[in-house]
Length: 528
Image (tube, one colour):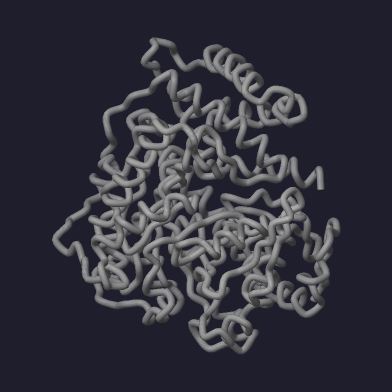
């Protein structure tokens, strides 16, 4: 077995990538790198079929799994009440402490959508989680001298690894770049399984971007292999799978069945789901999506998605987690009042539908989200009793879109958001507050893919403008000037020229590129 080779070195790297950990990682990579590459190739093949008109649907060959009565392994006690979760990047030590101390049930430390994977962030994230598990993490703010440390009681920690599609180019094995998910998963498990078990809990993950039950099968095999290798009791590892791709909504039963020894919940990753809808069906004009700001969970296709997830989860004995509230508190009273009302409406809808919990991006939203879920939960830990057994959600329901509208104002906002987010990501910041929303990779994906779709079909905006290349280029020119005025001198210190190049490459193309983070990643690796 060959050694792992590291492209560069940063402070603290030797604390995580010890010889023992590297041996464990090598075994994971040797056994699972090729299967991961195979399912990624299968994704491309399926997408080609979708482009040709073969629409995603429930698979008749797996009907028996959907029709039979079975359940996943019983949930551990500390995974039964997850009514409120907060998320953020593990690389920010102060944020990790504040999130674990927040008035929430769980903190999902996100190596994927909210963290830019420059190498120092990857290493810092693992160090911060290791110290958090042990209760030793602390931070002294250099500007104020304020000391941050964990409270006696903290939120339950869950680790979201990067998706199967993402590489970790800072490490090679036998000359090949390794899957990032195996590094995130392996390091967190190796360094924390014993400390977590000593605390009477398990090792809990979020798994993103699944598209097919064969991908879930790989994760089940990874979990089983890792538990055997580290001599852990079966089901020490429990995972929440994000249903955030359009193909996966038709495979939720199958995904849970493959992971029945390890599943804890499914989650409505709504922002990525909207992006995936565009990416999956983008070549077909009849699936033009309306403005992002109008796509609430009341939209027919999103309501059906939420309800089907609840129905599936509760039938199979796992929790049904709701989606992210991306709003953040504003100092503008009028803006803040409108945003908080939208959050309240959204969380009340989720709770009344039967979700067991929900996500927020800012602790200031915790009281609103808690009120919504406490009102329906009361003293109960979850809403597993809400079966939605008589709610017949059909394939047609999952395709039912709201009336199309495309406003020039929304296009302009999407341009500014995408450009600023790409620039932030290249600079090492995977989540950033932009125009009173906490933007991460998922929300930025909606912004750029929406413009790609409008350009692909040369849609007509409410202003009468046709979304051809000349119009879009002019809009980008104008919005770059707006951002420059907003940022002032800082604009000249940023990478907006490179961000614009990447953005235009993503929207002026025949097929919707799979993920904006892939071309961005090439840039940050070159800079590390």
